Length: 174
Figure 1: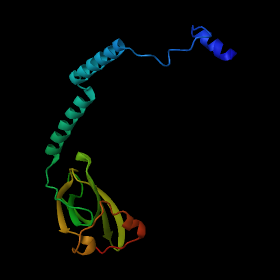
Figure 2 (figure 1 turned 90 degrees about the vertical axis):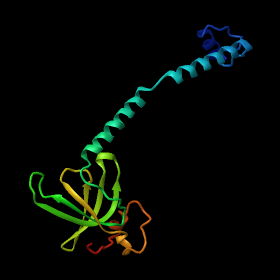
Figure 3 (figure 1 turned 180 degrees about the vertical axis):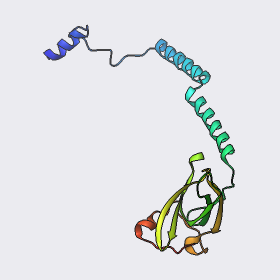
């Protein structure tokens, strides 16, 4: 009891009176003030444009502009389970090209940072290769076979097929 009285005295209240600061009785005037405050807040929110939203819209426009500038080749519509062939330059300054064939295990769509994860087999050794789709050294992308995993009979129902690598699934070379 003494603690409660000391705390009330510290707040400037009399020891015997209940604290009304926690539960305030509202009147009609208080309700009208509250409604006016909410209306003012809503008006302010309607007029206020978030700088973050403006900045993200500008950034999105810049990204679209960059995508159009770097889109030199046409990227075909392929999915996980398809076999594709990517023709790329051996080195960026040379004319010599190399072809990478493999089955698509997944695709990451992030604008200019879009990439594809290929499961390739070279000299009976399987390996994974991540290829960025808008890299300057890629000259062409061609679909070898759709639904390569099921020999073209039915589509794959997963977006990522990385579980096949963990299981040790062997895939013939496309």
